[in-house]
Image 1 (cartoon, helix red, strand yellow):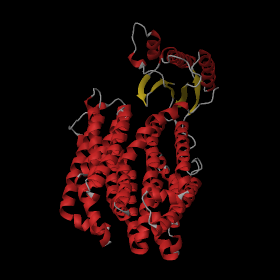
Image 2 (cartoon, rainbow, N blue to C red):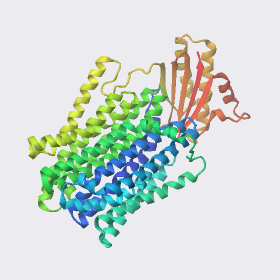
Image 3 (cartoon, helix red, strand yellow):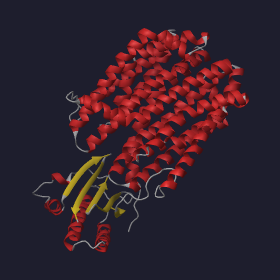
Image 4 (cartoon, rainbow, N blue to C red):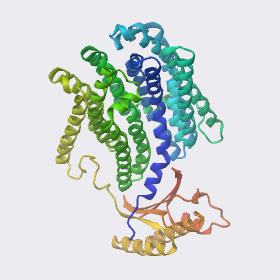
Length: 574
């Protein structure tokens, strides 16, 4: 029997990867570009002021993850179940939450902006520019949240290309307006803030036309409020982790200003910008992994989940090798890219970058475990990783400031390494209680069904060979001859129909996934292919006599079109 390949799983992962990575990029590029432009055009202190504001922007992003990540996951499930009404209600509930939060932020800015600036920035020297930047960005928080959340929904609603266009336009607008407002108009930090705000407005305007197309998400105010609790619950782990990163950023800024002075806050600012750029890869991969793995897990496809985990880690490993290599080999040149040129500042920043790159690597290794633990209901481990990974670098930095100030930048990597070690230890003890759990991942080795899976080349000979395997497997389980015949006939009809009508040309690099399992006295067959979209449930009765026979032989037949792939599930009562 042909071993199951990861062709279709990888293709499903790749179909959302670009949109997911670009979605996260849109949340990070604004502040990063502002910081670099301010550093070149005004000075390092202006760049530091944007970094001091970053905890607030991170908190806004955390709210987007809390609202958008949970809601978009529920919308994806509803779309997969062909329940557009539920998808529309969740979508409307998300918009209502953004509207309410936008009003709340307006009130916060109007009432307590000076107190907020004092809380973020103890330095009188940076107080004024910090206030300038925050007063603009927070008044327009609703556009930021709309941009981030709409990108998630447009992607899951089937238009990842539109998301890519919107994100590119957002980034380009920000860069161009940064130069116009800062270098030409001379608006300084206020100009950088307005450039960021306008770029998010452009993104929203490009995303909204998606909802004018037929069959897309619509507003459905009836009972939409009932979906809010489910959306917040689904997005809570990522929202909490992102909020705690805001605490980390605030704490590290305070330590740098209080203990390390001007050189310290500039070096930390560059490191934080590098971390933000790394999150484009890390969060983008996680946002791609979550919907694909959820659907596979829901379909009982445990090996498919392991394939997508492997794909995610391979992708991140390659990306982070290329990302961290320049940080280790050429830290001074990296610092110069951020406009750090004064000799004493350049020396401290170049010293900080290489050890900080280890923090990025350790974070990459552990972060993806959060959605894996969440997927398999290991909520305590998901919570532990979320909290510890956000706070450990802060504690590590504080410890090194007190114990070994010359090695303060190693504190970040030390904190992340401790999280990794504790995670390994805790999962070891979890496996002592349940030996069926896989090391570190804590995924059950058996999903509770008996069956087999394979990948078929696009040929009739492969179908004929598979039929023999099906016959042998079912007879070994002492199933009735009539049931064996029904499973064989339905499998043959569906597979040959896919090969003949689903593909214009039969490439040797394309495969059909076939999974057969015995679950709760039922025989279940799942067939997945990436050919042209075709629903066998809605066959033409004049020409689809074979499909009519399939529908008559099986007890349940269900069709889904997910990730640009056909998925047919047929069930027989044993």
